[in-house]
Image (cartoon, rainbow, N blue to C red):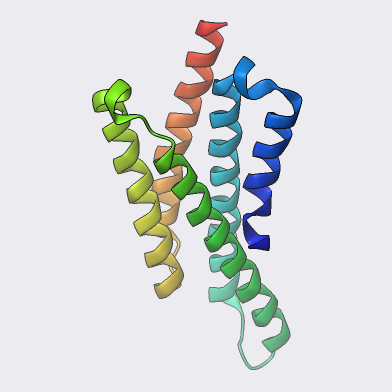
Length: 143
């Protein structure tokens, strides 16, 4: 459960500071930023792994594989928290669209992890970053 600590720590800090009631947009923004960050690290690590000469760099490969596994777990946990926080009754088509985007990210992460390719993850991250940008704009307009 230690791999979930990043997202959970952010959530706990927000709850502890009372910001959860004050600014729910900030909570979602932090979670989206964390997902984008871990997806970026995952893409970079997969690329590094492809370029390693396995025979000469076995210890580097082991470290990369641990980092990849850690960031896959973090990303999937973050996606789960985003998906379960959606309110389909109030959110309607927007909630459905976000769920589909999160699911697309999840599928691309799993595929990238199992096949050691990062193209799908890069594509999913770009879509997620567009949502994050829109989320930031929405937050500014609501202040």
